[in-house]
Amino acid sequence: MPRPSRWDEIVRAAAHVFQEKGYDGASLEDIAERVGIWKGSLYHYITSKQDLLLAVVEPIADELLEQTRALQADATLTAPDKLRRVAAVHSAIIATNFNYVAVYLQEVAGRRRSTDWDQRDHEYVLLIADIIVEGVEAGDFAPDLDPHVASLAFLGSLNWMTRWYQPRRDSSAQEVARTITNVLLAGMLSRSAAADQPAADVSRERA
Image (cartoon, rainbow, N blue to C red):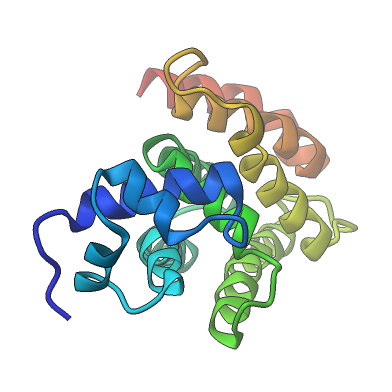
């Protein structure tokens, strides 16, 4: 279906309304009122409210998965560096698409809305777990580290930004990502890797 000129404005309005009222509590009237059009005019753009939910969450989910797949497959990076870059990507997407990500976490993640979305969520956790397994096998991470638990802790810390982060008031998304990964990696690194980490961090900051 072709999208007329106000499509982006409508999607932005839907993201705000879904975040404020929840998907089930939001109505097409609410979204139309926010845009300043009649409810009937929305049907030039969509066939159902679910079309708007998909428009809000799909682009950011696809971007995050695409970039994480590329990082996971990059043989030139160590596992700790991959996690740092994933965190940077994840936090940047939150900072630039705050309402959209909040809606995704609030209305889609873990909600079993469809098999497709369950598979996307599962793949993202597996990509992070695979990086952690790689780090364990390389000796970068502690040998008794549980990859599944560690991946959930990592993603949970990043996703929690939608509960407290305010882009115009708080530190930059990159600074937040660096702090989160520094805290989590401190508990994940093997003893030998931890001993080398301060020097590596200094050289990275100066690069």
